[in-house]
Length: 60
Length: 290
Image 1 (spheres, chains in turn yellow, orange):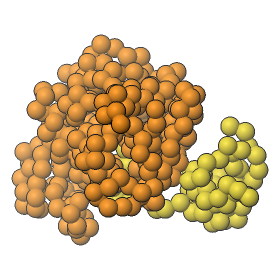
Image 2: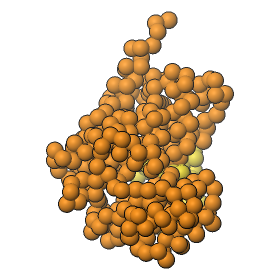
Image 3: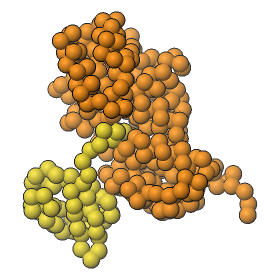
Image 4: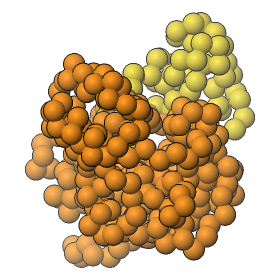
């Protein structure tokens, strides 16, 4: 996975490395604050939002 | 041949699966479950009418609903509803394992605090209280004595709701913070890891370390029997190593494997893709010619 660019974390405003093959809905972690983030837009530029909180029936 | 995948966001596993299908010349139609809606008598509006659908929602209930919905319309789902239901509910998992004679841990259920106390006395301390539905080690408590049991039962009563109306109690097995996870795809055990943790919980979601584990005939046999007991498909089997052999702890229908591919050297998403494509091909061949 090559890193294309850094996008601001919507939680802490830190830099989040995003892969150049990012997919809509892809989940990423912010290395600075640990938040789980979701890719909500690919073009014209990548946008991130905080991923939904874990629900009671989530899992494997 | 066409394949869909319903998921909640795209985790490392879904991305690896997308690449595996792409490498086989198949475009995977990835649909976020938050967009799913529609009349139950019709195919979901945002999901293309594909030959097979890989169900990988994070939510157990969404997987159950999707599987039943699509199957009622003749759709081919992986996993099937019967597998998802049995694996997602620890009571149903235990019952399925017991029915087929697969070695597993002693477990009890109770419906109220008084019953919980009696079940615990019968099982003996320490024991483990688990939510009937849940994963990643959440809300699982090791209960060392009666005082701790009272607290666990009080918490379940305070949390309330359907998920806590049944208490699942399981015998505690001292493993030194280690368990085994095996991966079974299409009836065949393809890989296994050992998970080690400083605590008694060995979920990698909680930071346990995974190392590749060589398959032996006993591990293969118990793993494949566990998978068969819950209805086949593809599952991850959690086991404890004991002096009496392997004991199955849980069976997971929406397996996570991001940490296991490198550690085992086994192309787990590739095996999954091949299995799903086999199911899709069978579905396509059974489709009436227009």
